[in-house]
Image 1 (tube, rainbow, N blue to C red):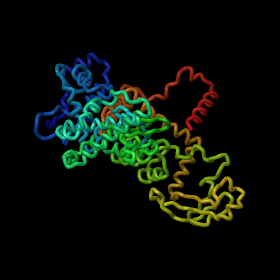
Image 2 (cartoon, rainbow, N blue to C red):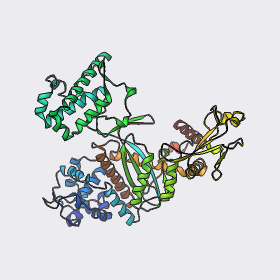
Image 3 (cartoon, rainbow, N blue to C red):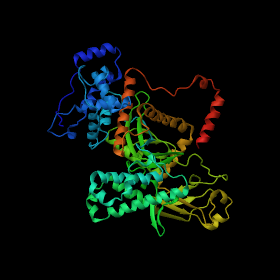
Image 4 (cartoon, rainbow, N blue to C red):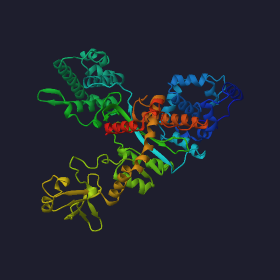
Length: 563
């Protein structure tokens, strides 16, 4: 398929007349086409197609179909049918009423081409640039970021099913590509044992039978590993099949050879989940847990603009594996926003993104005020004895001394390197002074003198300022704006299928999240064009009648339960 450069054709006259007659008030696809045609024309797809070959369908048309598809949560077949049968889609796609459309497989091929893009956010950035040109998005405004979990496209299996299905998967792969090798090295009884999916079998119930089953599967796996280590399997290893690599990884994680034979590694001795594989068919999906919620899959970070006088649009999408921490992603998000010239002046995040380092770097490198609860601010005075913390000590940075609450002065000031390779100060007090101090119970339980570890001055001061702001009434009121980002995930899950991945692999899941972001922006821009503005959370009539005192009591109880 080759791409013939051409501009977006005008809407056929008959299509326009019929569509306007059927929809006196333009349908969302029609409004989007009229308002954002420059966006469709701005995306350059030439690098994704060869220069010679059969002419391909216009990529701008396939891009718009994909956005409309995700906006209505359609399958490829349903989207291709809508392009063929719906007048509002034909209007948006500049198609004649008699145009039969295209085969649904074209959409899958188009997504595969998009995976080759050097920058997967090209389409989203193109729409955001068009919104900036039309005054619907501004730089140095307000933004907020949060993450949610994505379930991988797989069947979650227990360990017994996982190891048996993994062996079956590698046997099927080798039988497809190297049938002669399989006939030579695979025992005859394996054909009946691993011919069908393991979930179709009734696994043993008794513990003794389970142990025997898993031991036999483990032994079969080691037989396969020995066969793959022979000279005859050199070509197989050179092909580097994902199923073979996954098989080796799973056997290394779940089994070990002892003097008693093959045994299953106990659950408490398993390596960290980030090193594990949860399915032979989806090796990138990882297990994670957060606040009691367990899942296997990925995590997506959405950054949304939240200026009061403009539509709330998703300006950045970041997808990671499930076990990845939130904090390191913030710097990458800011770097991407800087490239797009979309850095905010104020950025709302939750405690998972906040650190002293992030507070300093966001302000110094990007001029961003990071607003959120620094970790450790929920309960300043830990324990029933109201123990002292760093804020109760007076730090004299120029003199390299620290004065404790009782008035004692530190005796040592040592610059050290932490695990993160950042400079930190280790401060110690004289043991004799601490031993006879009346405030000792509030200060330390150590037998020796009190020791403090201070972060670099700029980070410590930034952290203390953030804590002061968050604990103040002004800061609590300011932080309320962050809660609005939950509406992005609610809308994405309820309307666009955000919770579950349609595809396998991190890269394809990331592209799905990008198109869901485009679909959300498409929906919100359509509402904005007809005069609909973001509304506060809906409150029922009964809730509005609730007495103020009862509201405050319920809110405090809810906050206490969350903490």
